[in-house]
Image (cartoon, rainbow, N blue to C red; front, side):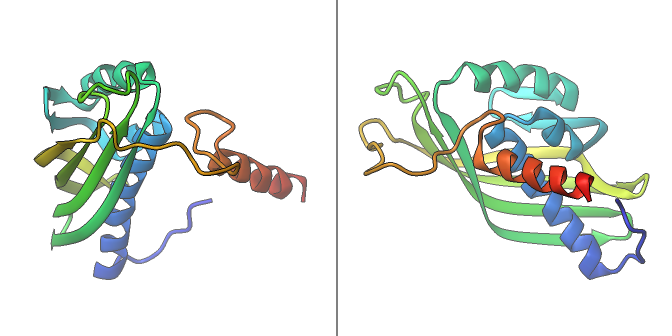
Length: 178
């Protein structure tokens, strides 16, 4: 349930931060509806190897990520937001880690320093990206650096058995039953 609240600079900044985090979770968990929710319809995205609308971006990135046996992890660090009423410039520094097969492929196993430079707007009661520049500052190969886990324990997955999805469903089911 969405609760209407009065906007403030703090609230706007928090909502914008959540947009950036939703995008990262969506990409890392292969939840492309969550990725889509970070953008306004018709938004533009500029990534390494891609320029186009958000729908074109999703059609481009989804098969690439689904074909990868491995995963990605986007870590957000510094985040600064300049507010201009119903528009904002958001700059989030981060690290994007990619791993996959073949294990000796530098294209499947790399880490990049990134900045998400976003033009965000507040429309239809929500903040979302209307144009994004995913700026790759540096990239290094991780070939030969990944090692197996040292023992049994939870592992990230990119399907309905990921611990996050299991927990979300458990709580939603319990709430629906009450």
